[in-house]
Image (cartoon, rainbow, N blue to C red):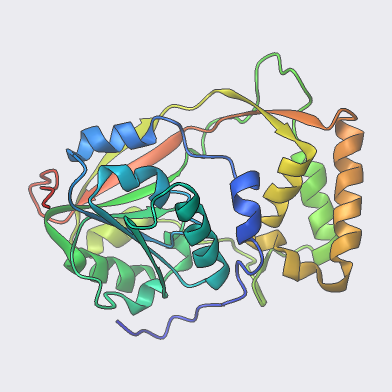
Length: 288
C-alpha cells in the first residue's frame, strides 16, 4: 500500500550492531503472557512490523509455526538474520526488508501482528488499516512497549545509577538542543494516541497487560555506550567526524559517575495492548 509518508532511511543507520548489548530487554515473562492471552500453541503465523534486529520476533518465534520480520533498515535485517542463525532459527523466521507502508507485500495472512516500539515511526493510519486486512479471522494486533510510568531506580543499588541527565546534556552539546532524527529534527518528539488510530481502523479492544519487570540489572560502561549509539537521536552517523571525540567524552562522563565502570539499573516492565481484528475480541485461532 503506497502512501506519501516519507521514510528517512538514515533514521537508525549504524545502530543495529549496538542493539543487543545496549537496549534493555523486554520483561522476561512477555512470551508466556502473550501465549496465555492469545492461546498460542506453536502454530499460526506472526508478523513483526518494524522488527529491528529481531528483538521481539526471535523470543516469540517458538510460539508460532512461522515468523516474518519486516524492517526498512538493511543493517537491522542483517543483524536479525545473524542472530536467528546463531539461535538455530533461520528455517523458521523470515526477514523482509520493506517499509511498513509497502505492506501487504505478498506476505499472506497472519494470526498475530506485533509492533515493538516501532509504530510511531510509520504512517500509522495507513499501516493499521493494511495490517487489519492481513490478519486472519480472530487475529490480533499487539502493541508492545516499555512501561513509561514507572521509575528506573533500584533500591539499595550495588553500583551507581546511569547518569542519564549528564549523558543527555552531552548529546545536546554535540548535536544541538533539538532532538535529531535521521537527516532532520524532531522538535516535538514522536506521536502518541495509538488507541485512537487502532479504533479508527476498526480494531476492537484493547486488552491491557503489564508484564512485571523490577529485577536489578548490572550494566557495564560498554553496555551504556552501546545503548546511546542504539538510539535514533544519538545514532553514530549523526556525530560525523566528531564520533570518536563524542565517545571518548561519553566514556569520561560515565567513569566519573562510576570509576568501577559498573551501573545498577531496574529491568523495566512491559506494557502490552491487544487489539482484535473482529468485534467480539476472540483470541486468534492458530492454524498449521
